[in-house]
Image (cartoon, rainbow, N blue to C red; front, top):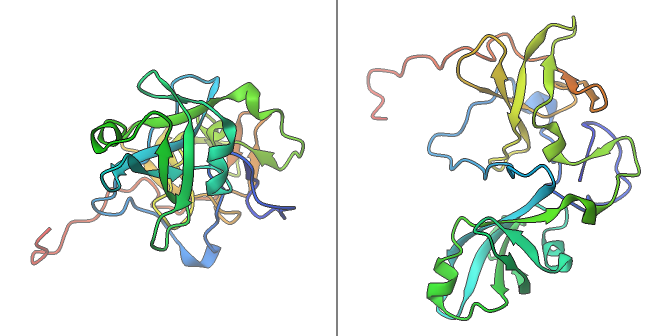
Length: 227
């Protein structure tokens, strides 16, 4: 669960990836970082909410890395069996923070997985929970980040700019990936109060104040750029 940009919070988000915000002055436009791994796709089943994604094995005895998208990362272990994208139901037997500075990266053990080969089979498998198990939101400023996907993006004059197709986060805060209404490549807009002043879930839209070059293609690389 996340909160509307700029709203106050009464406590940590309970579900889904937290809506961490970039300071408005920190970003004028956003580009996907070079070599950045794309976030996992939203669940194709609208009845499921994505909670986490497995990564590489850790050690030889079945532990595996897990990126948690819950507001409190360790809370992902408290939901019981979860829908895995490979068709199984999996339950986390133990969780602990991974070393390093990323609070949403965990080292976990899955019930029934006790060797490295079993852990390797989990790489890139996602975990989801049935939407009805999460209950209804109680605050109009709270929402699931997955609820943003599919919303229309309008400018202040009510003109459609595009449609939100994903809500990636590459470590600096949540971004809205927008497919332009006129067609062409998607662009990333920081999900901050400065860039997204109005969120109207009931109306199926957000009102954005994007930079003029939001959908401009990246400029040419310098001649001496080895990349």
